[in-house]
Length: 263
Picture 1: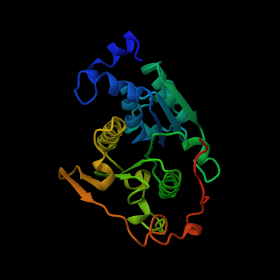
Picture 2: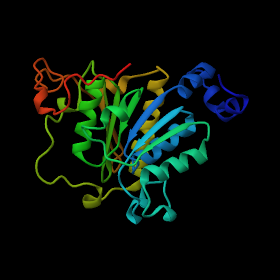
Picture 3: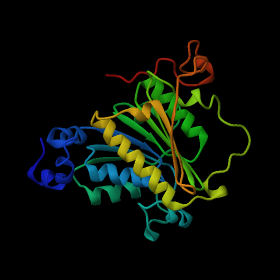
């Protein structure tokens, strides 16, 4: 049940016919885990907290650097040198003290993923490296947790929705790319692009939690902000995928074959 103060706080949500009081109660009872509290994680976390998602888990092992402030809007100069996950927790708690914010100052690994991800209604991946993206994809598929993956590069961004009943990240990218793949620190990025993709990730998350729309789980959304092009590309399961195909090669995934969360 929503308190009178919560009804006032979320009144602009509740006014929407797609949300209403029942929808808001659904948001306040939801659990979302966000992997990465950087350029994408910052707007995702802020908008989820503002919308009233009841439990938000943050995992990030990094510390705030001066170069982060161009796009990682959760932080300021007083945050430099401090843990991103802990600083994010402080900011979100100051924004909305009604929520349960759980912070993990560590890197997601094949040893801790079950402890951190289990119980989540949705996982959002916004890291800047392929190793983490593949790990989160594999873990969420095996744990049967819906997943949104976001990525940015210079003026471009992408969002991919994944459910265990459909395609996975490996249907598009079979293995971690070999060689040097430039990240934001090497190739650069416009900070507002992180805001665009992060805001869309938050919006798609809220829609999914409200059970209003899951079309993102059937498509790849690609955005070229330099030329103002938005493309929604249908994605199908790859029957030869080593994770979700007809003959999975689970040994190459390097996670437990029976990774289900304990009930």
